[in-house]
Length: 499
Image (cartoon, rainbow, N blue to C red):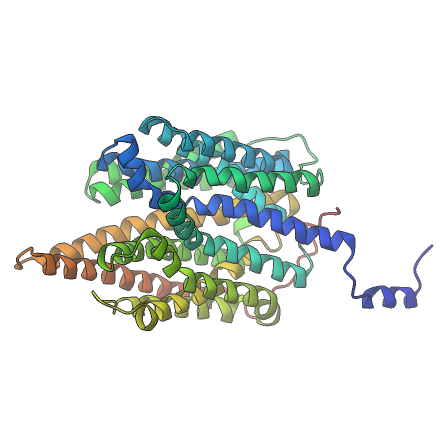
């Protein structure tokens, strides 16, 4: 029997959330836990590297492969992972990704030698590329009510942005009090909770109603292109930009991505449909994620060096030092997505975040050999974290708003891809620029301990200045690209999941 107007009004006024609503928030908790599992690996393994190197006996030259193997597999396969989620089901991709990531983590934690550790890290990247876009697309299709969506993306964006800082702290605790292997084993605990929650809460949804078809030429072109691009930037960090392998990979990657773009315009079942990218707000959001990826990865790298090598912080103290950034990021990410974006839209919020992040980075250029944490480091980290929160969560939401349900996986993968590529670009560029600054500082000076210490400070300050410049470019670009006003819901967008 249809409800009367009175019944409907009473129902809408009922303050008690329905079981379906409560279940959606539990799904958010599961998705956030899965995201933590992936994001932690961006920094937690870095803390474990010195101990792992001593235990397994590999060289300094080989050490980078523990990080690079993950980045190569993850970055090159993200778009494929997102399309698999669209074609074969987001729940299935999510759970398979979690199980595979846990198995690879166990393999790495128990690695008897360097080769097995690197293979395990690459396998983590493969399953992470399946898990990450599935998690974000589940969030996209589960929360479509504007108010709920804002809160959900605020939480997810805070987790995505703060995970690196939490990884540093957790890595320090595990390495100092247990063993470096627990930096990998901890993923088993996190993944087990997410798997259990996924099995209990996620319905069988998110699979293409048509017979699955995969764009094989496009898949090969973009996977090879992204692999070459990420490898080229990683190689530039260690061997320089003039090395033939470096620029050969970068040129090959660029050519393959152009070929991929041309293919997507003509094939019948494109891996990344042009309709996903041909939106002004989505383009601005992806650019914002690219820049934030470059800036965030750079901050974690160079500020960690400063805290540990210049101020002689322990790994645990280093992790604790990043907590103001985590706090600032979580506050602004949740408030931006739930309160500010629905009212004003991303146009004033994201550029403001870019400005705050740039300001925090410029404050970091003033750090010295004996800078106080409370008066010097903490304000800079608070400002940077607040700015990053205004960028990451709104850009994640804008990049997936309005996509068709059968495109939500690959749209989510595009977000992860640009952030990963941004991180690779940022680390390579900033490492080169900072090394050059250090070398130039030492020219004509005796290489005594004091000069070396100031050369390190100059290298870090150079990295912070260039990172601030990235965010300055992001400020101008996003201010021009984002449409004014609050986001409009597309009636053809992915519908809410009926649980």
